[in-house]
Each structure stands twice: as structure tokens, then as C-alpha cells.
Image (cartoon, rainbow, N blue to C red):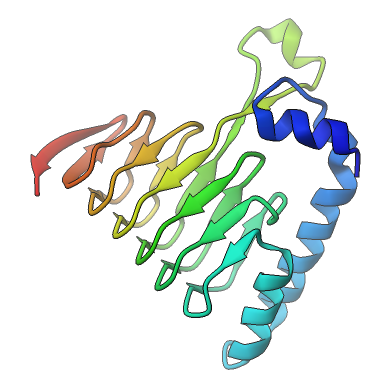
Amino acid sequence: MNRETYQKMIAGEWYQPSELADLRLHAQTKCFEYNALPPAATAERLALLKSFFKAFADDAVIEQPFHCDYGCNISMGEGSFLNYNCVMLDCAPVTLGKHVLCGPGCSFLTAIHPTDPKARFTNVERTAPITLKDNVWLGGNVTILPGVTIGENSVIGAGSVVTRDIPANVIAVGNPARVIKQL
């Protein structure tokens, strides 16, 4: 692994993802192994996730299949749950607090690509972290974009695209997600 490139990625600076291909391959291999485990192999599933995530609570659950870019930038708090087909592009930290519930098909996208077409040819990107505070609930197929924080106890309606921070204790829905109700 190129330590300098990794530090740039975590810091949100422009970096070359190709220089971290070995780290992504490691995560892809771990995801492949995880997705191949029988559902009843709970101890093995837990051990595998703990082996490559930054932090993973003993009672957190990820349903298969699951995919991520690096794994080492993901933290899942106690009682948190990801349903089937979730994707975490964890180029920056993705942090789920305690008792976070995510419906099937949720996507956590931390990568930011240049909007200038010529700059995209250089294959650089930068990142911004995603944080879900305690007791957040995401409906199915919610997409969380780079740099978003969702406050504690908030609910995001199914199919929503969260493009900016959501405060605590609200329900937000839509594309882009907007607060529609205080809890």
C-alpha cells in the first residue's frame, strides 16, 4: 500500500486511486469470502468483518451480499444492521453509530470525481466522510453522498438521495432529501 496516497485519500485531498489497487483487492477478496459464507456461520462472519473493518461491534449485522472499497475505513456501532445488497465506497471514513438500521440496497458513496471533463481523464478523486449518528434509520435504496452527516434518531425515507447534512430528530425524504417532519 502507498501510505502517502492513503493519507491523501483520508484527508480529502486529490489522489490517484490506482496507487491503492492492492488495498482494494484485499477488501474485494474479504467481501468475496464473506458473501460465500453460509448465513448460519455467524461466528465466522463476525470474525471476518472484524478482520478488515476499522471497528465492528460484536452484535452488529451485515446481510449478504455486501461490497466495499477498503473496509478499513468502516466503523459500525453496537446493534447496527445493514440489510441485503448494501455498498460502502469507503474511500473516506464511513461511521455508523449505535443502533443504525439500513434497509436493502443502501449506498454510501464517499468518492468525489472532478466535474471538469478534462480533469476526469487524469483519474484523480478526493473524498469526504459519511457519518450516521445513533438510532438513524434508512429505508431501502437510500443513497448517501460524500460529506453527509445524519443526526441521531432521524429517519430517511426509501429511495431518497441524501446530498447534504440532515439534523437530528427529523424525517427526510426525496431527491434531494428534504426534511418533512420533526420527531
